[in-house]
Image 1 (cartoon, rainbow, N blue to C red):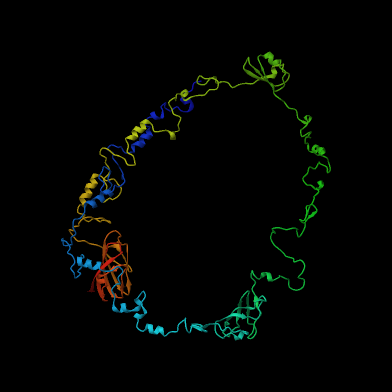
Image 2 (tube, rainbow, N blue to C red):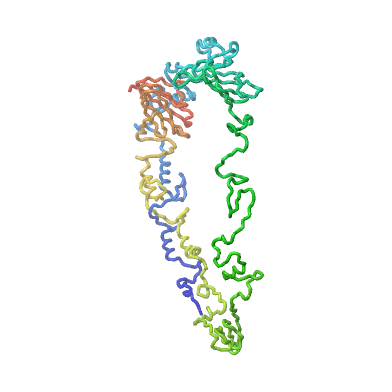
Length: 617
């Protein structure tokens, strides 16, 4: 039998190696969606990484790169005012505008942390002072203090009664060291604590060697205000307490049992019969036990846990046994009753085994030899002269009709691909000698496919050649979209003079020239917090004492802002680190408007402030 590739379900497979396979239709469809290296034409919104500013290579430019470059190229040359001329510096009088060298020198002279300027009344008010002041600087204070009684030295001995008066009466702590023999001898004061040292407390339950202890007497009051008898706590080698039963009689001392005194007490039952066994009832499971409280019967024998028991089984009482077995019968009778085989030496006797048929196989070379066999039913004869097999279906073996031929299927395959015996086929046997034995998922890129891929652009850092084209981004686009030369030309033309352009956090170097006004936001201060990220001109109206704070101060650049303050009433406390000319904050008049300018060049570590005050509202 000769096989071809169609015989093994591979009729459509071409006899080519993986490396020599051409580009398939599906692969070509996928390749058609890729960009060629030479003069690709992009569609949609192509994107690429944005190069750093000042990059001057063949790297593709994005719209974000174009915008950054335009801002860098549009460096202003000078700073001019709304009239088209340069701003004049501020005169010494402090007119609004740029800071003069004299004003800058004033700010430099303000010490860090200097006190803000205020009124004389505010400065003289001791409530506004902080820190320490020598007693000698306050008139009469030293003399007044010298006339007070000292707590130590002469006069510090004796009994010092201290009475503290509060909203609900008086409170006293007394140590008169007297014996309080009756409850009514405790001083009649609300909330008295009477503490006595080493007092004989009337022989509370102490060891005989010591009848002294520290006693705390607490005199309480009842809810209706009629009074109540005190309670005493005794602190010594033992802790005890007692209370007043009447005005003249103390109750008995009651000792608190602790780990040191527990051994001095012997538990006992009340009344007669405290000797003998103590019956204790325990619920739950006992961890250990020597005897069951109530014996349990096991097959009629009581078991209480003190000793093992022996149990005899009454066969007549066993349930579920075969009904034919008579009580007391021997093993042989029992096996016979249920049809079980007997055992002799652990083996079943041969006479109890059923008849067994054992098939023999006889190779013979002729019909005569087969008929001469001493064979039994089921034996087989292999005829080498016919290459056939026969089975004996009935005795005797000498009768040919009793031998039945074992038939074989028709159309027997005699050879495979010209081979007989144990045949092992190779791929060449089915016309696929050049096919590699790999799954579709594991097939490598063929030479033809790789050649096609070599003409495509990689997604990562492609190196395009020729004249690549792409859709031109809209004006003002600032993304990773690829920029065309048309986009760059339009953006440079539209922004050469920065006309009506919004610059977000630009870094501008060199001088700036304005052919119009320089404008900024006017920001109303929320609460008293000045957010420096919102602009450079702030307004605020105050009508009470006010403390300003600043936030979001640039940390690596100089920064200045102006505060227009409408001052109705109240004192002003400035944020930290403000220095004023001459070290004195300006005096403010209420009912006026004031302008303050603050400058820092170290991220708020120091502010220099100047003020133009008392404008008419």
